[in-house]
Length: 141
Image 1 (cartoon, rainbow, N blue to C red):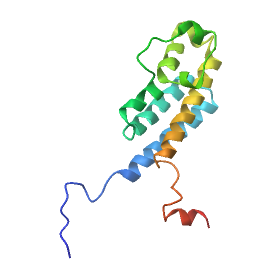
Image 2 (tube, rainbow, N blue to C red):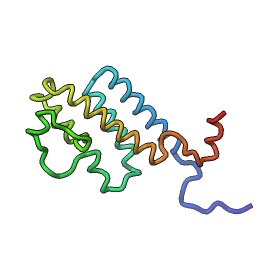
Image 3 (cartoon, rainbow, N blue to C red):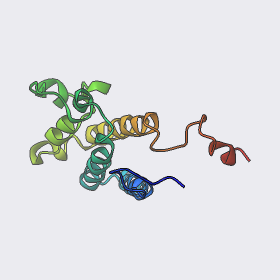
Image 4 (cartoon, rainbow, N blue to C red):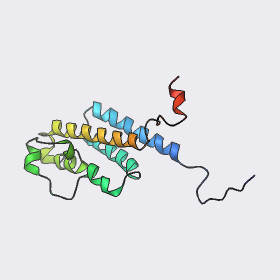
């Protein structure tokens, strides 16, 4: 029998971590159905934080927004693109002076951002098992 020599724990929190992600996504689903902008944004931010440990630092801007100023006039006119689906843009629109008049736009951006986060979670293997994973065969029964 060989001795286990490692600074890593024989037990890790991978399963518990995936449960937390699952719970965060469940809460996102609940608040999105109820169109509860504030809570949906909070749970989506929580989900992003859980994903962020797997992201390269240069990918942060895809979710958080970059360092440039928000093109407020264009955004307030509702002229948004997929690139605008960031926490920076959403939080800008959640300001009290814009929140009520732009709620449909905020809901749209939250939806697009959640889709981006879910896709990245899948790309990182944090949602569904990869087809090359031998455990995947169980799901095909």
